[in-house]
Image (cartoon, rainbow, N blue to C red; front, side, top):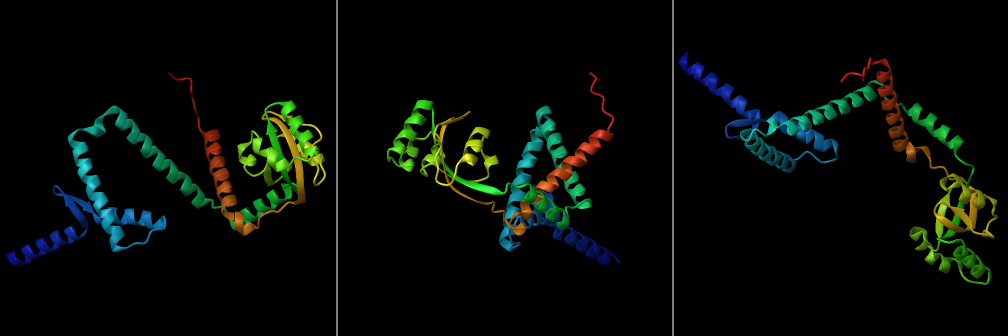
Length: 258
């Protein structure tokens, strides 16, 4: 009977050890903690492997060593540390709450498609390929226009543009809808015909523009499959915000207390 009891105790102890991946100063690190870390990493795209688990285990051991030292110094009892711990705890819980809300009320493929159709219908019908030269002063912009009319190359003069991004490309702004530009620029651009340049400088909050319209085309709207992730993320943000606003409306809040 005694031999059986000792054997049973040894078996229980062995099973307990098997559930731990390491001990640090006799304090066990449970295998469940390793599994949770590995699960998080695999969700981020890493492969579960002996090498990954070894790295996780080494990290857990290092963390435990540091946590034990922090405990000796009573770091967690410091007011500023308590505040940060509480703040991080709230952040984790709130993030989990948002995930739970989206799980209960997920964005469907139909929601994504409806939003895509809505955005497509609201998109401008035309896109403009424009180039510009941006100058600090009006007389500088007028001088550029005069030089171009006399045969100077637009692209060469554009190298002196205040807009350093487009200056490096000869003033090229690529394709964009008029709404992408400030109002004075957009109004002047849409009045031009293909190949035309503004007769006079156009003023905006950025300076004085010399604008040339290089081409016009029907708006090139990306296919649904290409923008599905962005639309889904945007709808999720809207749904979470609506959830928050609804809770705020239902809550009884008194900010007059001091």
